[in-house]
Image: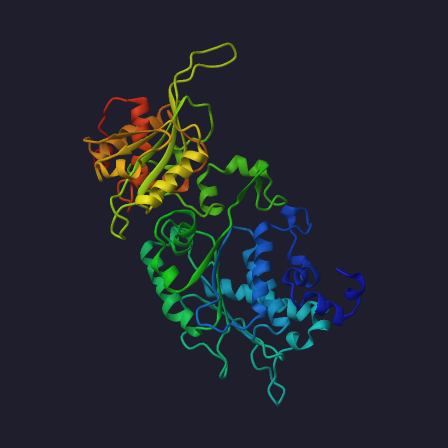
Length: 497
């Protein structure tokens, strides 16, 4: 910033007009620091991205449903500070928006955010000096205040801010002839203990049929953290972290999903999304916990699994002697067909005890797992990409129960051999044998890193919508380790043990 510009209102307005980050640093710095960051102003990657994306608010929305976004980041990443305070206050101060309607899971939660916003209008001296009409309430000809309530304020500049609970009556919300031009939904889903799939469907109905119709031309920002597997925010996460088909409402309502991972991979290794608040050492300590998956990754584990649970996954790396690319394929790519599972699985033989090192049993390392809806040439190209990415792959293992010789037509002339086979053993029996290998001590199957799509399918098995990755990993594991068949008790049988 040019120091001389900071000395006058005109200079400060010029500096902040097109820069919400500069606005926050200049007018709201006390909201950008805290105990966890040593009372210093620090920024996360997501904060910088939000500030960049908010610059689009300077242009009016000219097409219906064209400015709808979902922002998903770790819990306690200052989402409310940015989306309920810094960004709307910057846009209102410079006249880019006129009417914000903000929603949270409860009315009290939303009204608390509005109270913070109003406290700045009332007590922030620099803000009052530079934006006098924004900080003064609108009044009637006789001098009475138009609206200064817990749930609604109207300012002399013409700016209006309404705060509501997501399930309160909002149909037709407007002030005079003015409808909201900005809709902010922050944490609109309840916590896991007080939420269900049925309630998530009702919440979606409220969003689609009550909130969004307030204005087809409104800017919409849905901001949140996953609270439950299968919830709305989790559906959004899956739309960008897995190859599964997105929930229909995301595309139908033209939402763009922005997902921020807590650990960012770089050419130099890994780093935290917010190093000042969550150092990488802390991230490594907690990354395998259920809390991390829910509150940081936004990928909750299924607690009601008959087979795998989150405790069954072990992470690490070790040298392998043989590696397969395993394919569990679908014959078609229609919406009703299954996905094709692709997994890279390596094998390390048993190692006897040596001086300074313990003996290790034979083990498998799952390096990669993905589900795709590809066939023919597109599937072949993806297989070749994986062979390039994992040069240690020595063979492609294909379960040919579906497709038969079609696989040889797709996978002809590969740089590695293709092994086809068929399974006669029931799927649940095979899964039980693989699960035993995960649960042995030490575990015989290790994941090189968290593999959300695979682990979600395993925890949902056998009740999940898809299990292609369970088979894609299980087939090479059983081939490498060859454990004896063992029938897994049913849930009812286990309840009597």
